Length: 341
Ligand code: NAP
Image (cartoon, rainbow, N blue to C red; front, top):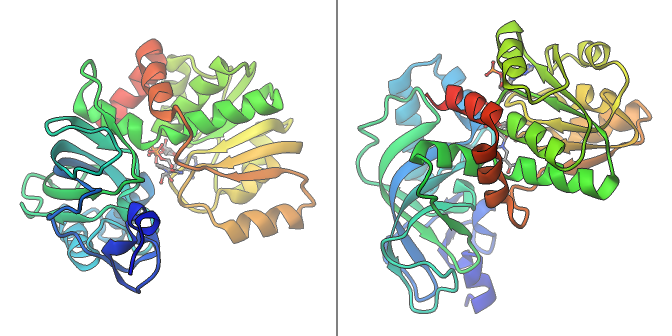
């Protein structure tokens, strides 16, 4: 028997194994029939998490049809879009088409919303075979239904931004919010962002500046990204290095920073991030490709006295912060725009 507190977390939808939370479940029930405390969304577009999409694209050598088939297979098998290799998901946008009488989310039928809870726990049924998606981009036009629980969160989409922009911003809005919070709490001044020309990276730089940081370093993969980041004017210093090469990162960063934010979408950035951070400083691992073991054992092995934070995708006010940074910052608009075109 599932009580109201467990129902609010979606436990009643878990099929296998019984008793776990939906995110840990192998399979959830995506039945579009809603309970009294649930909300159903008519899905319009999925945004696959960057680490998940990269893994799928690489596993299928960039073959879009094979990537599409893999996503359909995962959703059919699991009742949710949770990449079994990366464990990550993404989020979606759609229109609210049914609201249970006891739902506390404050949503109304007809609202266009973005889910701010991960696809890894969102019951999802796809009904169009993803026919309008070529399998080559993180953003996936889709038809189907998704279910929100009483403890889910969703944001009504802003009318002044395109769907694609909103989706991209809301997917990564936890990164700038976490960065701003750490800088305010620690009075940090110097910040290094790994993967600084990407979506979460450029937002984190802008958030760091707004929160009072004064020495911003953006680390990027190559000269093309360096040019784009310099043109955006978000960093005081742009450096080029492979984030997965710790010694190269340390050499490029030079004097370690108060805060390092890991925004790359590849595994292996843990040790470079630790070396980039001063004793007493903080590393924010926003990347879903982060290994807890590599981070913890790496810091221990280097006798590095750094605080390491898992980048929680949720911080109060995170959606509005990211939307505001996009609206107010031409550099952020340029970099995000180039990613979603
Ligand atoms: P993105 O826009 O693709 O940006 C990633 C950036 O990292 C790109 O500029 C990429 O360069 C760069 N990069 C990749 N490999 C690199 C390397 N070896 N050295 C230096 N730079 C490298 O990704 P995003 O959407 O911002 O997402 C970033 C990470 O956040 C992903 O791991 C994603 O899964 C995670 N995420 C976390 C949460 C959460 O709640 N914690 C939510 C959403 C996303 P190229 O484009 O040239 O490859």
